Length: 304
Image 1 (cartoon, rainbow, N blue to C red):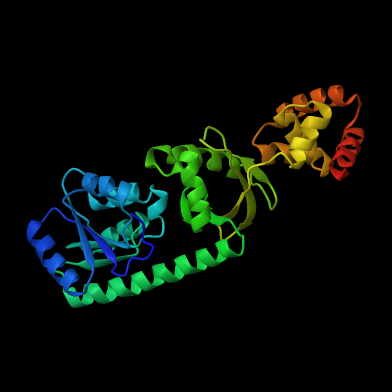
Image 2 (image 1 turned 30 degrees about the horizontal axis):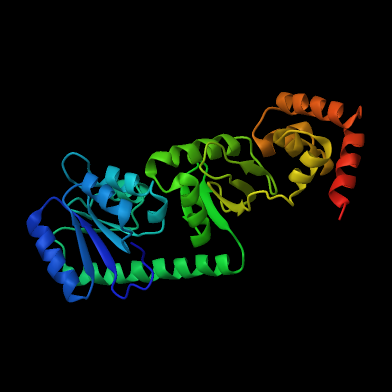
């Protein structure tokens, strides 16, 4: 179920207290909001596999899976990255407030809940979420396939088209999120710089990421690149010289003047592995040094 063309905000209320759910449902429906209900964390995860709410109200203390763990699990779903989560709790001490914010919440409200205050806060966060979504859509319209991650490889936000591409690659399922996070975490540990690229592995569709810039000490801005096509530079190199895909990748970056260490960072391989590929490239191109290989690649890519 998509948020597109929905006139009324859809609110997911996650709370194990039936009385609280009845009170919240009545107050929210009076404000022309559509209310979905989950009595515990696992139900919330199941519901959000098929429906993307506009905002989530989440009880902090529940049996089986508490609200903090539920929020972390919800935020592993890429479609929920930008959905605001407001914690409802009877605990107002700093430790639990910080725990909720660290889990991915944007706000908290203490029980007993005052409906007017809750709805006012919800409207602020709904407005902010829509502004963010509009900004991301504008980036898409300008052809900027951008998204942000933190140093652990966790998605922070994506533009709509990036999210669509990630979904097609099989990353719409929380169970596949560790695949992306692990590869990103390994790549970022090598401190890539602007222009470095990462072809993702083990996905339903090929995806290549490009490092653009750090947003701050923890967060990174990336761009999703188009999958190489029959007219791409690496395809031309493969066709011209009979090299493998990985050898073509190495040759391409040799032509761009990159060192073995830089190529290793870009392609997520060791400099020694780069050198092994380069030995095969030299043999297939019948050259004996990287300068000659680079010149041959540049001539190939310059052909109309």
